[in-house]
Image (tube, rainbow, N blue to C red; front, side, top):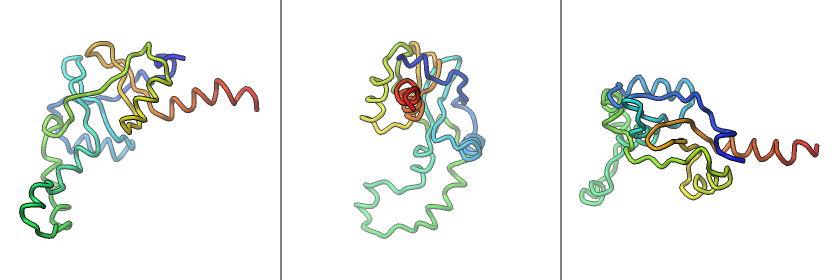
Amino acid sequence: MKVKDIMTSNVRTVTSDRKLGEVVSLMCLYRYSGIPVVDDGKLVGIVAESDVLGRMFPKLEDLMSNMATVDYDEQLRQYGDVVNLTVGDVMTPTVITIRPDMHILQAASMMVGRKFRRIPVAEGDRLVGMVSMGDVHKAIYQSTLATRL
C-alpha cells in the first residue's frame, strides 16, 4: 500500500507572511499541531506548536550563563509578543517530506524515527498531501484485521 492511497489531499496551509496570531487560532480551534507553509505554490516550511511555544522559553545558554531561576509567569506573558510575529519568523524552514509512491510502512518508520505524528507528502517542492500515524494505523487495521472480525 502506498502513501497516495491513504494521504489527506485537502491540506490546510498558511503563507510565511501570515500573522502568527491567526495561525495559532487555527491550531487551537482545529487542534492542528503543525501546518505546512506554502509560498507561491512551493512548500517552504512548517509551523508547529513547538515553534510557537519554543519562542517563550529561555535559551539554554542564557540559563547556563545567568544561573538564575526562570520566572515562568514572565515567560507566559511573552506569548502576546510571539503571536505578533509572522509565520516566517518562527517556522521550521527545512521540511522533511515523503513521496506519494512510498510504501506506508516506510513512511511510518520515518515518522517513528523522527518522532513525528504527521508528515507532509510532496512531489519535488509541491505539497500534495499529509499523512498521519493514525492514517497508517487505520490503513493497516482495515487491510488486515477488519476483514477477520
